Image 1 (cartoon, rainbow, N blue to C red):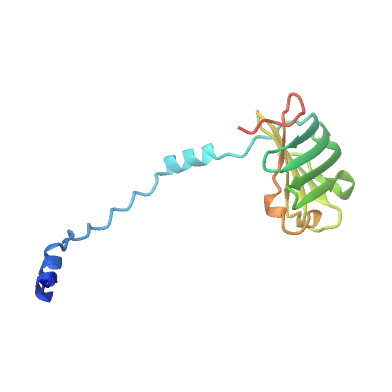
Image 2 (cartoon, rainbow, N blue to C red; image 1 turned 90 degrees about the vertical axis):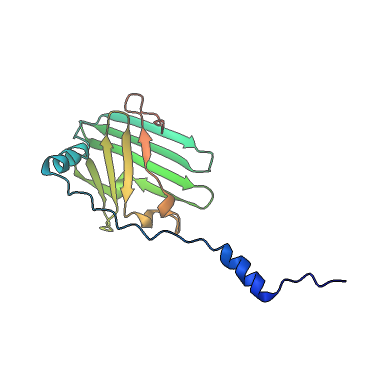
Length: 169
């Protein structure tokens, strides 16, 4: 039987022939020109905050999502004055958050509504309206939630016409 191994020098020659030579790297791309003042101004105009609106709503939103997130929110607002509010949300079976108006005081009516926790913990509830929905959101309210779920606790959205849960699309 004949030895079918190639001599070492032939293997090296074969590998060298397969080497790919890459072209030299391209020079770095030129920096984009700085935006002109008019363009920067236009960009700021597009990112304006939601305008202040008079909020009047009798909101009742109760729903369960496919992922187990559930909410039960009731809110009455007349001329930007929060008259009643109770809101519980559940993050699957991992825990819940609960907010009740008795634990808050209203500190702002415009350009959006703000409610601050009476215990001075920094927890803030905010309500604002855009053309499609009224949003009830929270900030810095970890103490109102089961430990470990606060990052998954989303705002509740109400339909401004019916007061029911708004469609999220």
